[in-house]
Image 1 (cartoon, rainbow, N blue to C red):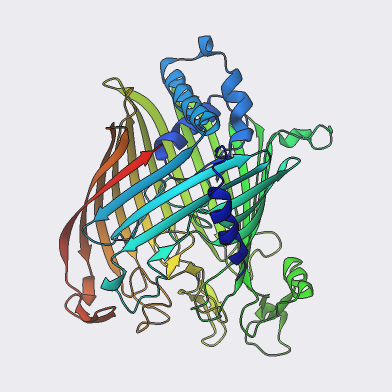
Image 2 (cartoon, rainbow, N blue to C red):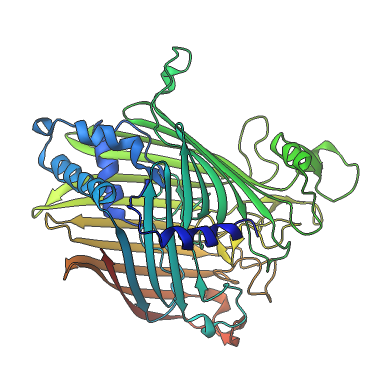
Length: 524
C-alpha cells in the first residue's frame, strides 16, 4: 500500500513524547470556520480561506497583528476565538484528543463540521511537532458496521486522520489520511468534502499564501496551491486505483476569492499506470468513448475519470449588513469544451451575519444540482443522466468505501438547504439546518441491485424534508454535542414497492423518522 511505512513511523514518533502543534486548521468546526470567514470578509485576514485544511501560517500574521481598537464587537469576538485556537495549537506541549459519538441510526447526509456518518465511534489521537516536522497518530473504532454486512465500508478499526508532514521552504509535504473541504460551500461542495472517509494520500501544500513579489503576478494577490496523489481502496471495481487532485485559489482583492479544482482517477488493476501514462492524462490525452481504436472526434473523451471546475465567492456589505454570494461548477469527462464547462453540476449560495439577543448569527442558503446529462454512446442519448460521479471503466465512480467524495447528495439530486449558526460569548453554539432534497430525480440507477455501485444514497426517486438541530457546549473541560434529526421521506410512485438493501428486500414506505445523536470531545 502507498502509506504502509507511515503508520510504523507514526507509532514510533508518538512514543518519543516530543512537543506538539498542529500546522493547519481541520474542517471539523463550523463556528471556527465562520469566524475565519468573517475576518476575511472584513479584510482582517488577507489569505484565501475556502480550502481546508487551512494552513495556520497563511493567517497567523494577520490575526496576531490586527488592530483591535478598529474592530466592532462581532469582529472582536471572532478574532479572539481564532486567536485562542491558534495559541492553543502552537503553545501547548501536548495536544491529545479523545471523543465518543453515538447516534440512533447511520446518517445519510453530512455537512461541514458534522461529518460523523457512522452509527457511533471512538477516537483517540495525539499530535506532535519538532522543528519542521509534524505528525498525528489517530486510532478510530467504528460502531454499527455489522448492521450493513454487504456494504463495503472498510474495517471497524482504522487510522483515518493520521499524518506525517515536513516543511520545506514554503511548502508542506504530507503523507496520511486527512479530511479535506474544497470550496465555499457550507452544507456541501461538489469536488471534495468530508462526506467520505479521508483518502490516504501524499500531498504538497503551499504554507504561507503571500502574494508574488513580481509586478507581473502580484495582481492575483495571496494565493494557495495544494495537490495530492491518493490511493483508493482495494475492494472496488478497479482495485487500488489512484486519484490525482489539485486545487488553487487566489484573492486579487478583499471581496473576491477564486478557486479551481481538478480530480481524476487513473491506474489500478489492468489499467495504464506508468509515469508516461500519468503525464498523458495530465496533458489531456483523449480516447474513444465506445472503447474503439478510432471514432468520430465528437465521440472522444479524456482518458481516466475526470472532474474539473471552478468556484467564485464575492462578499460586501449593503446597508451595513455583510453578505456573500458564491458559485461552484464542476464538469464531467469530456468537459470543458473550448474552455466552457458543459456536462456540469452547479452550486449556488448566499449568506449573511447579524446579531440577535446578544448572539452572533450566521445564516446561509445553499442550492445544489447534480442532475448532469451526458452523452450515452450506447443509447445515442445526449440527455442521459446517471453519469455524474460515474464512469464506464471506473465503475465504483467518485466514491470511497461507497460514500461520495464530493456532494453528500450524490448524482441526479437537487437540494436547497438553509443553515443557521448562533454563537454565544461563552463559546457555545446552536446550529439549525433545514433540508429539502430531491434524490435520484430520474428514478433510475446504473446498478439497481448492487448497493456498492451507482447511487449509494437512493436507488429510486425520493423527496426528503429534514430538520437537523444541534447544540454544542463546553462543560467539564469537554465539548459536548447534542442533536436531533427529523426526516420525512416521500417515494412517490415507488411507495410500497420492493428495493434491494443490505438486509434483503425492503418496502419503500413514506414516513417520518426521528433520530438523536450525541458526541463528547476532550482535549488535553
